Length: 600
Image (tube, rainbow, N blue to C red):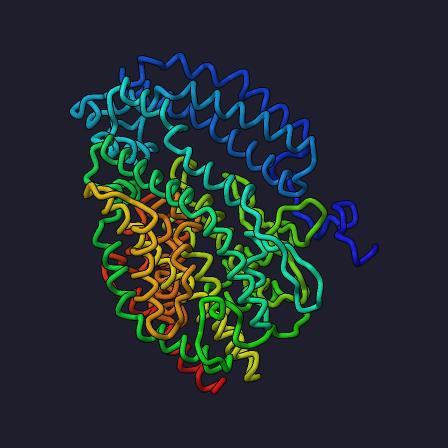
C-alpha cells in the first residue's frame, strides 16, 4: 500500500473497523426493518382522538410508538455510521435520504400524541399515572406533562410549527455566508508553500511555532469577517429575536429561562457559574503572563494563546498501546468497567484509522440494545489522539451502561450530562500519565494540555455564556442589537477575561459574530458545568472517598431517569453550589504553579 495516499476501506483489515453486524447482519435486514416501519407507522392513526380515553389506551399507544422508535433508532444508527465511513458513497447517501424522508412522515403521523396527552385533565391524569398499565412510562409522562404550561392551543402550535423554518433562517444564512461565500485566501507556510486559509485550517495556523504565520492568519481571517460584519450582526440579532419570540410565545419570563426549563436548571446555576469563574480570572491572567514569558515575547496577543508551550512530543503509540494506557488509567473504576471497555475496544467497537471519504474527527454513537461505536482517525504519532480515545470511550461507556440499566424510554441522557463522562476519563488519563513519567518535557506537555483544556472549556465557554445572557437581556429590554452593541459588549468581556495580560487587537471583538454556538443560544454553559462536574467526580474517585466509584458508576447507569442536577447530586456533586467549579479553579491554579516550575 502506498503510504503517501489515504487508504480505502478495502486496504484496512476488518479487525481495524467497527463491526456493524451487531446492528444488522446485512443490508437486506436493514431494508426489511425499513419496509416494516413504512408499512406499520400509519397504524398510529388508530389512537388519534383516543389517547386520553383510558390508562390502557394510553399505555398501548406508548408501547406501539416505542416499537416504531426502537427500529427507527437502529435504522438511523446503521445508516449514519455507514455514511460516516464514506460520505461520497451514493448507496449510503441514498439510504440516509430514504430514512430522513421516513422520519419526517412518522413525525407527522405522531404529531397528535403529545397534545392529546397534555389535554388529559389533571385529575384524570393523576389516576392514569398510578395505573399499573403505565408503570414503565411514569418518568416519560412526567416530562411530557411538565411542558403543559408552555404548550399552546392547537391552532397556535400549528402557527409556530409553520413558522419554524422561517424563524431559523438566520442559522442557514450564517452557515452559508461563513462556510461558502466567505473566502479567506491563502497563506505561505513555513515551508514556502501556499496553503488555503479556511474556517477549519484557521485553528491549525494558530498552532504554528512561527509567530509571523499566526499573526498573518489572524489578520487575514478577521479581515474577511470585517468585510461582512454588518450582515453577520444582522443574522445574530435575528437569532436573538427568534429566541425571545419563542420564549414569550410559550409564556416563559425570558429566553434564558425557556432554555434552562427543559433540563430543570435554575437561573441561579447559570449565574453562579459566571460569578465563580469571574473570581478565578486572576489565575487565568497569571497563566497568560507565564505564556508570555515562556514564548519570550514582549506582549501576548490572542493569536499567541493557542499553541502548546511545549512543542509536540515525539511519540509513536500504536492503537493497541493507546488502549492499554486508557484502560490502565481507568483502573480506579473497577474491574467490571475496565474489562467491559477493554473488550469493546479490543473487539470491534472502534473504526480506528483514516480512510478515503471517511468523516474527520471522532465521535461515539449508540443505539439501544447494540454496542456503542467509536469513530476515530487515529494517528500513532499524534499524542493527543490517546486523549481522544479516552474521551470517546467515556461517552461509549455512559451510553452502554445506561442502556443496560434503563428502559428504552428512559436511557438517553441530556447534553448537560454528556460531557461529564468523557472529560472524567481525560482527567483520569492525565493523572495516570503524570504518575507514569518523570521526564520534565513530557510532564510539562501534559500539564500544559490540561491547563489549556480547562481554559478553553471553563473560562472561555463561561465568557461565551455571559455574552449570550447579556445580548438577550438587551433585546428583552427593548433596546436595539446593532453591530456596535455586539462589539462593545464583547469587548467588555475580552477586557475582563484577558485583562492587561493580552493585547486586544482591534478586530478581535468581531469574534462574537463567528461563534456558531451563539446561533443556538444557552448551550455553551453546559461545557463549563460539565468539566467542573467531571473534575470534582474524578478527584473523589482518585482520593478513594468511600462510595465515590459506586456513585459515579450509578451516574453512568442512570441515563435520563432524572433531570441533570438531581442526577449529578446523586453522584456526589451539587451543581447548585459552587464547590465543583471552585475545585476546578483550584486544579487550574495548581497546574499553573507546576508549569511555572517546569518552564521558568
